[in-house]
Length: 562
Ligand code: ADP
Image (cartoon, rainbow, N blue to C red; front, side):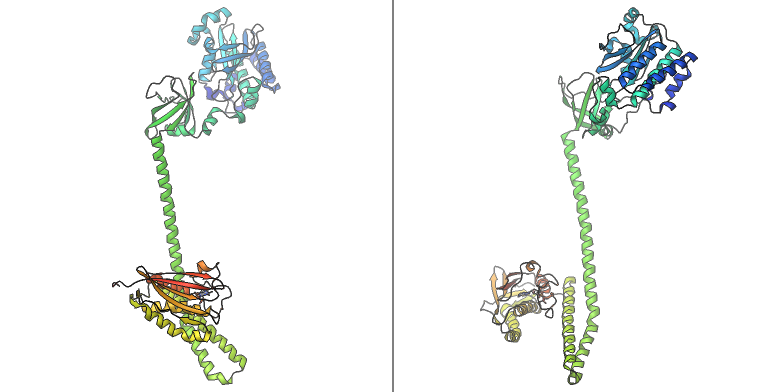
């Protein structure tokens, strides 16, 4: 009836009603035994407190087995039990027994399952205790684990010493009683049972060693004196080959012999057979060698470093890939946006030209026949169309520069000529605006530039200067040499640029608040920057609101090469 019962099958997986152990025991009962079993079950069910429950079970069982002695032993420390309660009056309670004097306890402890010797003569395990048993008149023995605070802890043992050879129906009855206790006690909170029976309490939260091991951030194992693994956390199981220690499996033996024999070593280096071949580990063990040791495995620093490096390299590679993808996307969006803008500008160019010419024809042909208000409308339409045309020209210019469709012709350009040309061309506007326009005398420099485009850059800057400088002010264009480059400065004494938009002033469509909407679209400076860059130069600005601005264009000097 108890053959093949191991620790895992003895401690219940099923509800009592479906329990195969109970069923097997019940089937072996005599009629008288059945009645006794019924009484026992009632006694056991009647108690909610573990201590009272065990005492009631002992006395009920003692009544059912008159020629036996029933006792319950509670684990104290490794290999030591305290007699918690006994049916024999002469047994002193609270006495500590060492398991090596009680082979049946040693067996229960070793296997975690019941130990039964129906006759002591036939049990080789009891040979060493023979004279003791004889003196006590014991003829048969049965010891059952009935509760363990944690799977790896020593169990509470229900023990029956028989003064006659054990009969099968007697054995069935005590087995049934013991298993009733197993069911009942394992349904109670482990901490409560352990606390009431005076056992060392498991850690708060009912953690058993297995879950504690799992909390450790490194591979951890509990091994016995022969390095046999008793318990291991998931990390250690994975490290050592992904083996779950299934019951019946060959026990895993670590072979943690220290490389150098250090007496009482608490940490050492070792070679351990792992999933991917041998690994070199540093292992620590708890000081107390006794018969169980906690071993924490840490990969050798070398292995750890290379694994860190691998992680960093992998993360870096991932980030780089993400960055590349983001860049490709951005470039694609920028390309699409530029294409859309230039396509749209192209599409608008022709109808706008037609619109402008109609407006001009209308103004000319009907000029005299129109009322003042009609003339005003026509005028506003013509201004709007001109502004639109400038915007579209600007957009197309920018798009052509961005895509390289409008290549520049770089050659030597005389600084004096280009400045004189711009100033001469804009003088009428300066006069009309009553703003002074001048270029202080400067040395002649040969710039490496595209004459037309440089003219466009400077004209744009001077025009802006004139536009944003009140009458009485002044705009100057100065040129000087800075090493192998030329610095052109267009300075005005105008309104200046608010600091908030100064850093963005060369971006498309950026205009200072309050700028005259009919004057421009905010594309001029964007084109200026593009052109300067295309000529190998750069632009920047300094400005003080209310005092004026200084736009700088830096260009390479002509060195004789294009
Ligand atoms: P636009 O003049 O057609 O609006 P720009 O790109 O040439 O476009 O100039 C952008 C904005 O920069 C202008 O709207 C104006 O607010 C400011 N700005 C440019 N030049 C000057 C200047 N010399 N003084 C003050 N503000 C300026």
